[in-house]
Image (cartoon, rainbow, N blue to C red; front, top):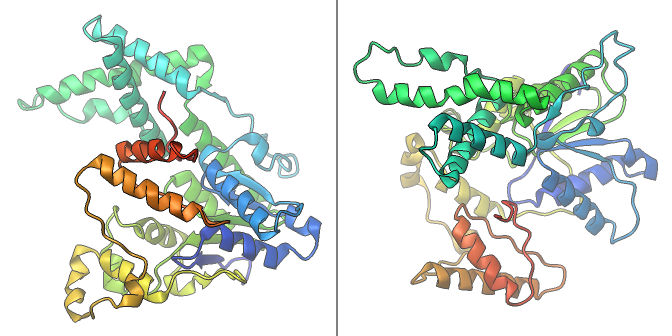
Length: 390
């Protein structure tokens, strides 16, 4: 692999991602204790960093270990980035980024602006909900590096059917006209904008002065444009590797080109196109001692997730065998409370085996809270990735 050739690898679907990542890092850099500590691992979130630390703990059997530096791309901080080297490349230090407004302070400030804009026609509760929606819009716009300035020309006033749009645009002036001044008074910027500033600064530094130590970007699909730019800098570094989570390299070209944004492989497809690398150039991440699910299960999942344009392939495919369906159960429940009880029992049974873990993946927050409540009856504390509502 040359310095100009992007190094992109993938951990197969069905393999425990952080365990495979930890095993591969130990295999590559674990020959001496200090060698592993020189590695920087870029991960999507702080939770992913914590999971990787736990994976190293399992791998070492609880023995002390010098871990690599782990940096969360989704919540990056100056202290977790490379802070030295700007003087050598003749660039002023861009890591002196402005302070980010906290989530709570932003919520309160936006709520106050909404109530002032509505002139007492909305309750505090309604204003808080609207402020939350405005904050989500801000995050999305700034994450995608877009501007709110074009909103004023989105719907021309002379269009007869655009009055409801004009009302909406008038409300959004809270963001375009009032919010910048409110932030300036606080001396802050939005967290998404600050994250972009830091990621862009890190990419510029590594582009100008490639690091000598290994840089491993793992688990990110570049859904944030600033992150994708950083991955494009990391992949051709002399010791840089981008590790994808479960890339499907068996899908045919028709299926691959038909992927829609809702498909789990879409982000990786877009990232590979951005990196200008084909699926055939992606190699396996070597993780000694780590085994994944059986290939039949992976094939079944890929077939189930075929895009609509490719579902004609189903008629030519065989019925899934017992190997592919092993361990899969379908349980019909009369209501959500019974559903939560069944899930909690299954998870509790799993946890009775020493060293085992269990996870519930669901978009239904109500179901997740019910399951957590059921588990708490047995003294089982749940680590909820979505947090706990106030």
